[in-house]
Image (cartoon, rainbow over all chains, first blue to last red; front, side, top):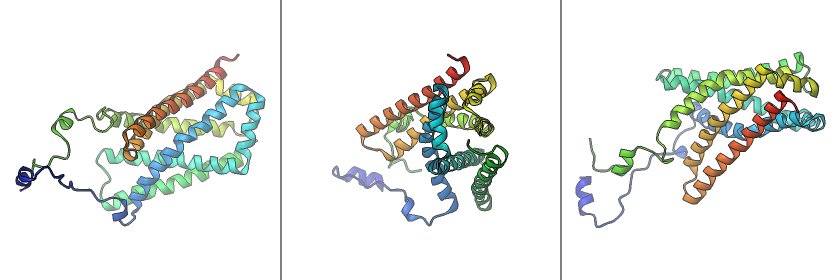
Length: 142
Length: 130
């Protein structure tokens, strides 16, 4: 059929089938977490600037380091760092979920929902634990 | 099986190199760097948490000590490659205009090299002094 059409069409472009995209689907947890995995990855990409800034400041001397400390200790700095911590942990747990899926395990409906929910709850829990430890045990930023 | 409407030309299929013109190698490298990234991320978070509340002098001393510096260097090198592949993936998904795509891919390489090299230099300086 298609062959016949291709043979008889006079150079007109044949419409190729398009796969349905985001706006077609009802939002689902696995889909949202897939998007979040990419968004956290992109955020962490630029977050490496923070790590670089901190390391360069430490290598540069007390004055440069003091300005990093001031920023990291400020309200905005703390919000950014909290978000950074969560993004890092979420991307790591999401990555582990993808590695499990790479082994062709955990694809049953209940399993994939459970795995996805576990990454979300896990990342939030770990972030809170780390920050509680950071503030209570280590005394927070100087 | 219908072979009458191939989505790719025969040559593209034989080469099997995809939109990045480099095949599936990056897929596997992304898996390798993600596995390595798990213990290294845990290490990074432990190091940063341990450094909280310390003075500049103490931070310099700890970051420059061999084990900590090696973990930091491994994290940065591993992450650099992982994030380079990841951002390339994102660019290839969303940027279709050829010139803009090439410029974005180039910018990705420049960014990753600059940020990771700066971080590596800082750690080496902390380790070897001067």
